[in-house]
Amino acid sequence: MNRNDDLYCVESEKSVTQFVTDFAEIVKKNAFVVNNFDTMDMKKTFREHGGKVPDEFDLHMMQVCKPTKADGSLTMNPERAIFMPKFVMVFSKDGKTQVRYLSFTAADIAAFVLDDPKFSESVGQTFVKIRSMIDEAR
Image (cartoon, rainbow, N blue to C red; front, side, top):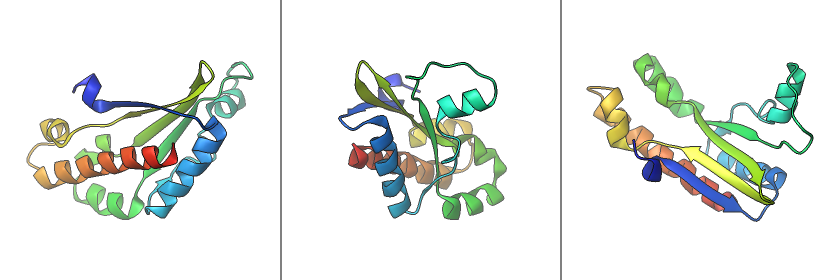
């Protein structure tokens, strides 16, 4: 893993709420889903479970999934599951909306899921697609 290659860090001029809304629409248009739409607002989630965060805390942890691809992949080999949850983090910092996404290259994936080169290539392409959807939403 390499921080410069695997951690995608970008800003948006949009508010956190607007970015989240726009990104969810783009995800849907590309046959992905935000799997945790009702629980991605971490201020709300933390508070519902007794956590204490300030009103200005606005972290959204968006779990992106493509169920029509993941179903067959995980049925074939559950070892792949470690690479399946893809989270896009959206929050504000210094008055700007920040987006963070940890992805992996096909080589990274191949080092962990042995003897499965098609999976490494396929998931590697998915990580690239999610980055492009982030850019489109910005």
